Image (cartoon, rainbow, N blue to C red; front, top):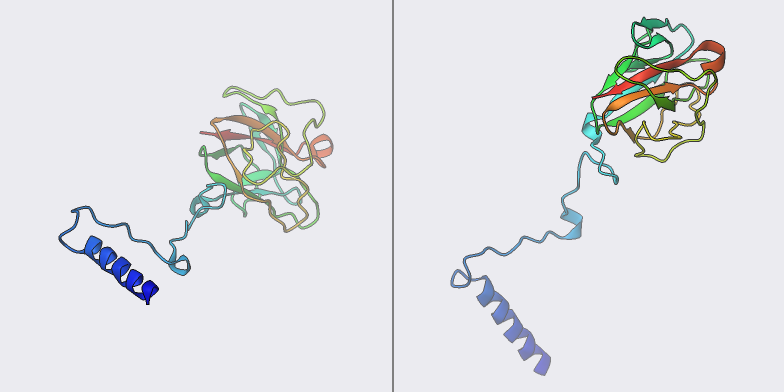
Length: 186
């Protein structure tokens, strides 16, 4: 009986606090866990999934492009459907995923060093990594790599990071085929 009276008193106090005679500030709305608002469009790293960019890589049937600033680029392009390589321009601080759309070869997209707005001092030999970077890593991070992407596979989500000019290449085909490009992050 003692507990029932205490519960009634507590209920009366709570009701009084919620009445129109109480404070003018409104009480916060608390949703039960099953109805909690989800952070739709973002992953656990805060990367906006609704604006995820796509960069494709391919060697089989791909045409090279000669950039007046960066020389011959091969194997990388914005989107997933091009057959002509390009210098890839992406916005800063945006989610990006890399797709190996090649039907025959495994590839990587690996950071090789910084370029400038005027050119790229390409390394004589591949000097990047082929070990997969943690999801959310910025592409201009030293040692960045998508890791080995077999034909028809995609990378984890990464970020374009800070503005800059980034030389990238393929672990398997940089030395033999010149598979490389510059990614310009604006």
